[in-house]
Length: 88
Image 1 (cartoon, rainbow, N blue to C red):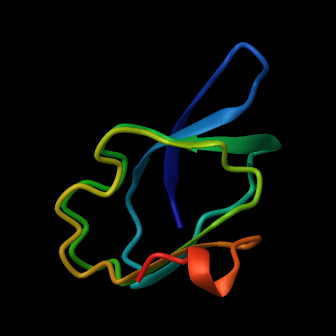
Image 2 (cartoon, rainbow, N blue to C red; image 1 turned 180 degrees about the vertical axis):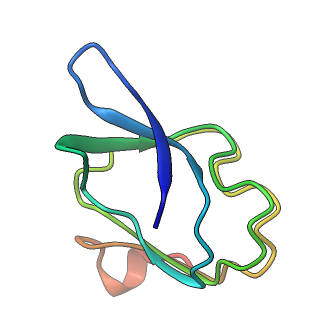
Image 3 (cartoon, one colour; image 1 turned 90 degrees about the vertical axis):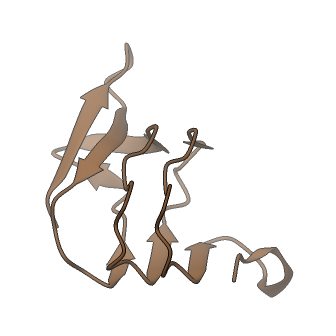
């Protein structure tokens, strides 16, 4: 998977885009040695190919409309979520 990202003052990454074509995507907890702590505004906008997204435990924030118009996205899970907390 190919991600674009920005870094905050602590050198932690916010994913701002994705150019891969996976239908089931595991977002990494680290990119290029930087801890991933957020998914930015509209980072995955219009990704109709996405069906399942697994997010790392390090993720602190999913910003506004990060998955906007991902009409086929059915499953979003964070590693430490219980069965009752998962988004289906």
